[in-house]
Figure 1 (cartoon, rainbow, N blue to C red):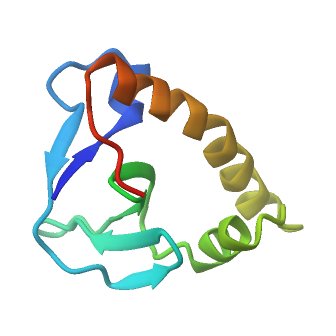
Figure 2 (figure 1 turned 180 degrees about the vertical axis):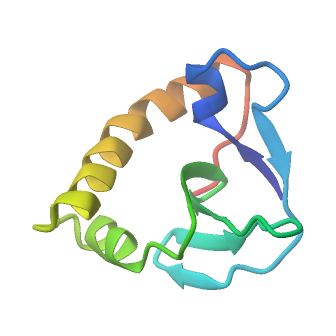
Length: 106
């Protein structure tokens, strides 16, 4: 599946705007899926809403995903920060997709 990375757009990186993943998600809740994107000794995960990357983490962000699915801002500061950042990112990600004619699948 081809994924759009809105963070690459924010950083004005042309070469990292898209990535391909052929793995099955290791965690899913609603329209959110987390994939193991590790290589070598570096372990990290990408979480997507449909085919748009919404966060990259070193662990599966279950609390964040649950908050997003329930549309409830979390109380703990770290998850709250990620939640707010994700909520702000989504409209930007949709605009990036529109600019490059990327079909968003949610």
